[in-house]
Amino acid sequence: MEKKGEQSSWVIDPVHTRIRFEAKYLLITSVSGWFRELEGTVSTEHDNFDGCQIALTIYTSSLYTGIEERDNHLRSPDFFDTLKYPTIEFRSASVKVQNDGIEVAGRLSIKDASQDIRFLARYLGTVQDPMGNTKAGFEMNTVFDRKAFNINWNQYFDKQGVLLSDEVAIHCDLQLLKLEPVAAGN
Image (cartoon, rainbow, N blue to C red; front, top):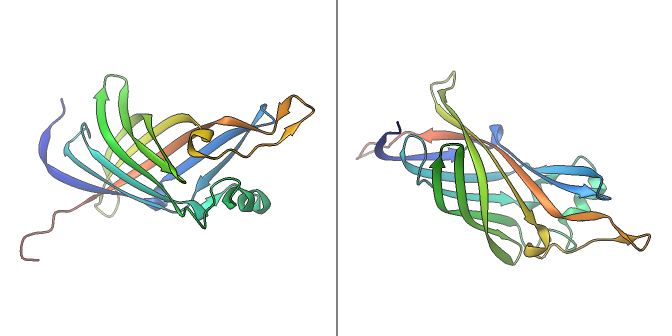
């Protein structure tokens, strides 16, 4: 049974968090990358995070696929246009704990477009790390059409094939660090 208590604040631990994106290349194999710089907060009154508020900022220039030429292309105006749009933002609208997981709904903003999006999440538990910090773990997944965010570049070949799929899968391995309340007068 979940417990309701005082409001608690958590921050995303960027060292132990990874947000990966994946799209089909030639529509047969997946090409993936991740963002290496991000920050975010979670505020909740419930031990199981039901109804929590999530705010996430991802720094687009931190994307990494392991291939410098591809990374530079993804940072260009053809894709993320990182000089003009340095961040991706997500703000939750609702977080509902269900029997089979957690449904996270919110607004995702990439470049000059914002769309409502849903993630399916799985709560992995809460533990204390060796230094006494309280940590919580989650996995989150979603799929969306990149064209909804004005990421339209593609290349056609052989009159029938396309280089990249429009569908992009996102997988998040999230670790949160609970912030200890600051005593009044400190």
